Amino acid sequence: MKIPISVLVVIYTAKNEVLLLERADHPGYWQSVTGSLDSLDEPLIEAAARELFEETGIDIKALPSHALSPMNHSVLYEIYPEWRHRYPPGVTHNTEHWFQICLNDRVPVQISPREHLSYRWETIELAADLCFSPSNQEAIQRLNSL
Image (cartoon, rainbow, N blue to C red; front, side, top):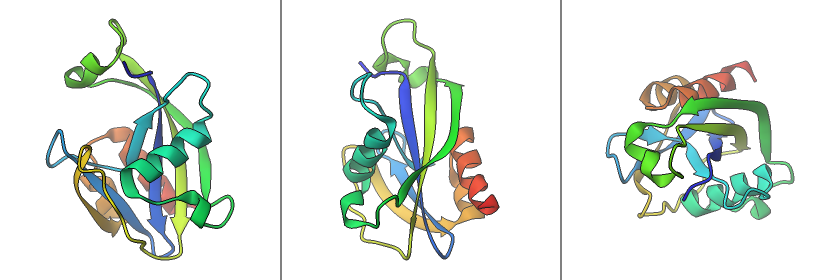
């Protein structure tokens, strides 16, 4: 069962291109890297780095130190009913912690076919519009204020 604490990692370039992933379990649903903690004691930054690598093949060890950074924001949202079966009985909400990673330029991406069908790089505005999740949209829109 999933732990209702997750990370969201917005990946973008110095040219303000945002990486989006298309969900395998729901074609047409675009999002940033997301994932739940593996254990209650897993540090959030480690969960973000793990999910980043699992879903894109991007290894923060190959990037400058502090490339992955917290956005110092979290949201509590209602879990979509179609995905509640992944959580313990009675769990209806998840706390999502936001992270960002700015790359100098696009990098090769290796998606996890179990989780995603495809990926694309888009402008901040279009990427936010394409995301199905309101919190993901808001996280991407915050890049404009950096």
